[in-house]
Amino acid sequence: MVKIAPSMLSADFARLQEEIKSIELNGADLLHIDIMDGHFVPNLTFGAPVIKALRKHTVLPFDVHLMVTNPEDYVKTFADIGTEYFTFHAEATPHMHRLVQEIKANGMKAGISLNPSTPVAMLEDIAADLDMILIMSVNPGFGGQSFIPHSIRKVKKAKALLAYYENTKAVVEVDGGVNLETAPLVREAGADILVAGSAVFGANDRSEMIRSLRGYL
Image (cartoon, rainbow, N blue to C red; front, top):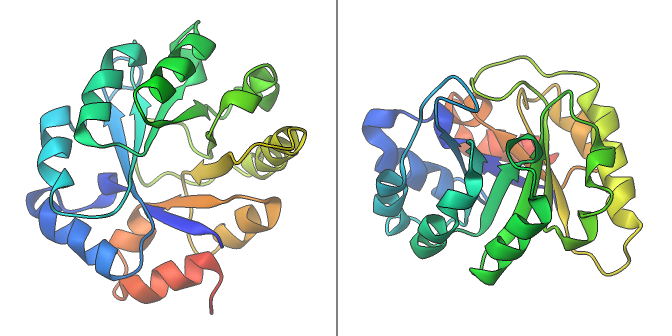
């Protein structure tokens, strides 16, 4: 079953606790949390203290997506908070394997994210060690962008790469421009987790939206 991870970036920041409880009660599977540092991407978002404060208010697994330089500096912090997935950008560090091992040693699942211009082939020598490949279907750093069509091809390539390893349980996640029009395309391509921001938080009926994104009409 495809899982839905609403992006906290699209929530009402003045009502974060209430917003997160809402998506939990309406069927979300994970909470996608974008951490931006103003360097790797132009915007700033949440710091660890905010995420830590929210941890006790939801049972949703935390799917933390770090759009930051030096992602290795954040491993212990987010492990201590209780993070399920710790995903960093392939473009942000020259030592992907070392960082993946550190993430796992701290009890988290390790993911690597690829910008729209970064090929899936970059992960050929590390895919067997991953728990997630995150395909960015928009350029990172801003919410509300339009879906980049060639992302569908990248999802297929990521699934094919993981399929080469018989024992992997790694998943493919898609983040950016996911809505009722694009969700069927990425589901068909093989995506396991869909990140949806404004589509979920902006919906009049969040439960129905989450079901529809999954493909339950």
